[in-house]
Amino acid sequence: MPEEKRRTLLDRLRTLSDAELANELANERQKLFDLRRQNITRQLGNTDLISQTKKQIARMLTLQKEREITVGKE
Image 1 (cartoon, rainbow, N blue to C red):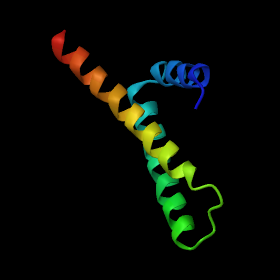
Image 2 (cartoon, rainbow, N blue to C red; image 1 turned 180 degrees about the horizontal axis):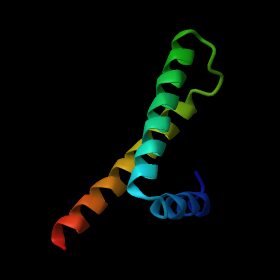
Image 3 (cartoon, one colour; image 1 turned 30 degrees about the horizontal axis):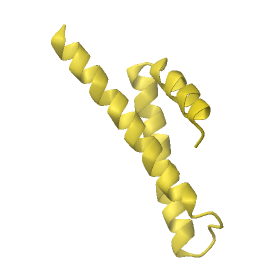
């Protein structure tokens, strides 16, 4: 993923509220589940989507953890 696109995506995620971020995370996890199912049944053409989705989930989890840490310090 190009650096500019990743930064734009991270900026968009940072503007979300905690509930919205949790909702986006749930959607990405469902997407990962569907991609894995498609891969097993050989319906997935681009297998790189699985690793991209996993990285996106990791970014979201990192943002959630950052928010937990900053709330704990206040």
